[in-house]
Length: 313
Image (tube, rainbow, N blue to C red; front, side):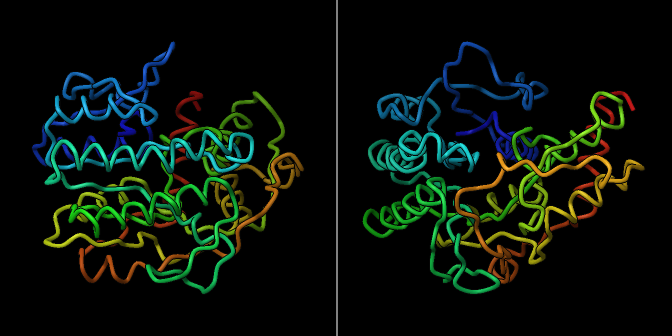
């Protein structure tokens, strides 16, 4: 679920490489959103379904008969959750409950991965954050993900499902949506370099995040479902960087001076900002054998190069 998104496309590639038969759940839309998986369409099977429709989930599971289910579908753009808090809750909270209930009804042996988020920590209680750090979400998105996280734990403990949550910190790639700050910056750099614009509006440059590469993070998802016992894991690089550092690396890589192009736009300031997000992935490293392979500078330059190539420069 969520195969058309950034993580879904990388996960589909990984599963195909591992020899899986891959099914993806897709919502019926007036315009297709397959650009991330166009190169995979002849190797995967797409099934119509919707997190808002319980029956469609049951039918999808009956058709695919999966051994593993990865729920990556969500209303994932944090700022939009203030504009659509009810819909965010329906998809991210009740949608997850529908997925778990469908698994319980159709085949309780299905192993389930649920995508949790570092946004659940919000107003952080300790630095760095671990699996035991209390949650204090600061957005409707974060609140909805806390519900999804705990309902997954509840179904695991109540019905003995093999259901796990990966508490993933920010993970990016050239396939990231343009609305997210990392891609907004790298795409903005490419547009400025191509002479299509001169300015890039951003919000809080001092906001800090633990950014990793999405390709590394989907590997962790898969590893969680290969364990003997279900458990939850923080997936993070353990390094925190500011939006300002992101901007400096991106513009410098393209031979530009960011201070000549970046402007502060109050429209991009969150109503409630999260604090210092930085994850401790020690448990994942010890129990899964997982560690990131792409560092922050490598991630940013990878994304800049991809966007420069898109604009022919």
